[in-house]
Length: 91
Image (tube, rainbow, N blue to C red):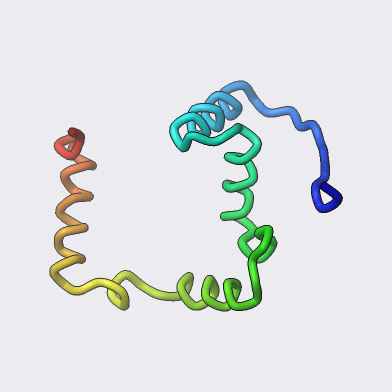
C-alpha cells in the first residue's frame, strides 16, 4: 500500500466513542469510517475520484433543494423535519 500513510493519532475519548459507534452503525471498520468522513471534508482528494467526479461534485454542491426537488417534495421534507424536531418522527 504505497499510496497509504500509516499513522497514529490521539483522539479525545468522546470523539473516539462517537466515531466507533458510527463505524458500527455503518458496518465498517473504524479506519474506513475515519477515511470516509475525511473524504467528505476533502472530496477533491478522495481515492479513485476522477476529474469527472470532481466536476460533478462541484456542480451538485452548488445546487439548491429547489433545483432538484418539486414543491411537493420540499413540502414533504419540511413536514418530516418538523416531525423529527418535535420528537414525533421517531419510529
